[in-house]
Image (cartoon, rainbow over all chains, first blue to last red):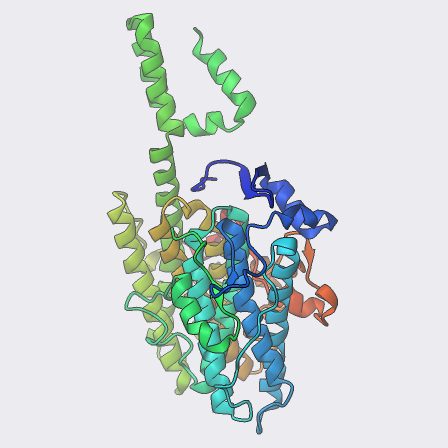
Length: 232
Length: 277
């Protein structure tokens, strides 16, 4: 398999600034297990205590934190829906929106566990622009989140150097696209992939982290600093 | 200097050396003739040229991308021809929103064919071409009423879309050397997932027991398409168990739904082969 980085090694900067190198397989083994502390390796700083906001970090860890931030936002949104569901919610809508909530929580917690000591902290959301008692408002926001998630993962793919992480992002983005299509159809049946989402070639769109975070920022009290993310 | 010894040595670190050199037997034969005539000093250059063809970063990576895009193009031809024929078959699709949805999907698959052909051409490679006569959408009789029974048609559509999602996902790693191509492939991949979601909703509206996402390895169709869904029941990702993760109430069903899985090229080929004449 060819990769942009032909090395089988992943490089991480240790907290004392030393470059650490260990094999991808070991890395994947560690991130799920008790040895996750090895990743305290702090490619990100938990909190800068300055105006720049939460630093997502650099390299693949930064991209995973970026995904973790978006999943935090989505999971919080769907969790909030169920604190007081909008009036007129049908049994079918309730069941499938609960599915989506569980998927987003699964994504969020997966990244949290995988990143372990390198994970950014919990973000504080701001849903003041959403009227949770209104179906239109809730579904409109859901559509925005899901379409945003699709463009975010599609744009992040090329920024990832480890093929295993690319596959993981792929496993998640297609589920986000399934969500997006379902939500769109709830709003207007048949709009699952209309020209507000796709381009003239029938392709979804990709957004850069900065474009995504500008949009997501509307729903976040916590400021996010993406300045150390890879750009190509 | 014995070239066979050299290749044997390489085989110790790269078991696929013969596979890489395969198809270049002509070159090897030429090399043998050539080596009989040239001075010993020229041998390293001649050898280098041969192995550069087999291992060369530029040519090897490009060839892999060409091959991967042509594989995707083949799948898009399959889908495009399926919807072209379905939409054009009188009496198959009942009047209503299904007509518009399937026409939309048809147009996307056609656009993907056009796009991939242009991408492959732009890379200096030759895109494959398939015509309607090369497809058998009954899959050698497994779906004999595919163009007369709307439910069968939608079941095949669902299988194509879900399989397409898995196929693109499985090939993404092969495209990492070209950011533009990788991004384009990802942008197609998520559209296939949107299609899958909608076709599943269409089937649900007609009584099928499916959701927009894949639960476990359930087909919602039957054993005939099981190969397209095997492996989708995975609930552990990168060593992390998703079920009830970190104390949250996540069922095995939700854990499997939350992540779509890959298929290898060989698995996809085995699945779609019956649909080709």
